[in-house]
Amino acid sequence: MKKLGLSVIAAAVIAGGVYINQIRTGESSMLAQVPVDTVFFAAQVTPYPLRAQLEQFFSPVLSERELAQLKRELEETTAPSQRFLMTWFLHYAETADDADRFLNDYGLADDITGYSYFIGMIPVLKSSLAHPDRLFATLDRFEAQSGQRHEMRTLGERQARVYPLDLEGNGEVVELWVAHHQGELTLTLGAPFLAEQQIKQALGVTHPAKSLADSKEVAQIKQRNGFSSDNLGFISHRQLVTGLFSEDGNEFARQMTKLIDNPSEVASFRNPECLSEWSAIAGNWPRTSFENDYRLENGKLAIEGQMVVESYNGVIVDALAQMRGFLPDLGRGLEGPLLSIAMGINADTLQQSLTTVRDQWLEQEYQCQALGEIQDELKMMPPEALGLFAGFTDGVQGISLSVFDYVLNQRGQGAQMLESVDMLVSFTAKDPGKIIATGSTLLPPLAELNIKPGEKKQMDQIMGEPLPQIMTAEIAGEHLMIYVGTQSEAAAQRLAGQAPTANGLFSVVIDYRRAIEPVFSLLTVMSPEAAAELVPYAEMDARLALDLDVDSRGLVFGYRQVPTGQ
Image 1 (cartoon, rainbow, N blue to C red):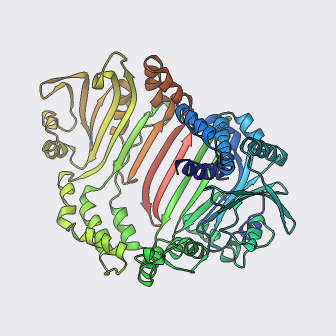
Image 2: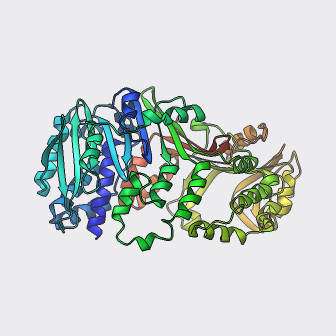
Image 3: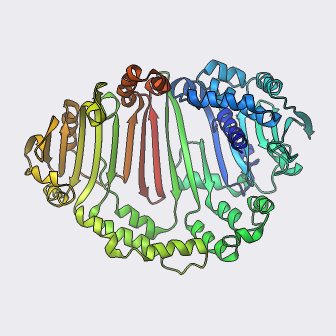
């Protein structure tokens, strides 16, 4: 079972790895290929700089230990289908850090385009393919190494390689289809999941009866969310609900029904009540939509995008918006932190907002078992309980922790391994002094600060215990800041001049190279084998920023990955 599980995982990662979620084609013809009831759609219309990603943002698929284990399992495996998938996955893992070899072996250009969608539960992956002969030569090698063979089939004007994969050795075959036509690669699964007519649709021989081009859903997504990029996609909550809770409401449901051996086992959620109630929820939260933008800046790849959990439930969206607090801007590039975590929270409205969300869930009595259980849990959380945390955070607008530098001591143990740190902790509140008074109840050392607005106080000990470094506490405006180190001191001065406006819920920033470098240097001396596994991260020129916010569209997740110096 372990080998089978690895083989199935290999199939999934192969598809994702070769495709990289990225066909040069007109948008209307592309959308005409996608069935309207797809649960997922993603398009990469503008050329994606794949080579730049492989060279700049590479991270290992498997560790050296995992690679060795996979090779041992491959040697022990005799089933051709399992050997084929494991060989493919092993090749992918070993070439992902070599852009020239990866692109050459899979026949891909430096820049690629593509799109993906689902026919029911089955993914259809499309990618531009510059050199099909190279890809098929690579697959031929996998066949020779594994004993797996393919069949050539023709549907309309399309030819495809079909790999009949007997993963469990019981004669039950899953077909992997690999096709190429006019510069377009198609990967999908055939029998027993897809009928011939559906495979024809996947290969582009025919079109679905109703498509995304007919529904105009993509145009609606762009307009509603203000997306400017054509590199976008969505997850349809409504189609997922229909697929999970009905027997034949869409293709997903029909395929799932065929996979269910005993209908009584799913009767607790596959019933009219669950379908009706979950459909009503999905009507208010219809989909998760996303867009991506990729660009080269001075030869370096920058990635930006956003993902929106769309909502038409104005009551909950307004309640969440009332919770927004202050997220500080402490700089980017080398002047910014190597690691930063911030939470924006309006403690004054927290209890009321949480109570509103709770009451919305309790507004009607659900009959569906899963929803009823959620309601039972919420009933055990009275409004008074939701307000306990707010009592300790009265007036708070935001909390953040930022690390700008740190040094490790290879001779130290435990906490003593941290030789020095340059960091800033900030609390933003209407009355920062009150944080000390209320917070000392939970954290007694805070009582020793005894600091007034406009003051700075240096501390070399807490509760009689000496600190490894002298720390400074300062109240400036509506910010209580505790910091140590020159970079943090400069950041504190920048923060002191920032007005605490509500600008988000949560954010995290990590500079891979700067964050990993001290650990890597230490491990190079103490454990070279462990250090070797960190080499890709220590060399990664990337700064990742994630944030969570809420606006009139719903919940908004933003992400930005740029070279370290930006």
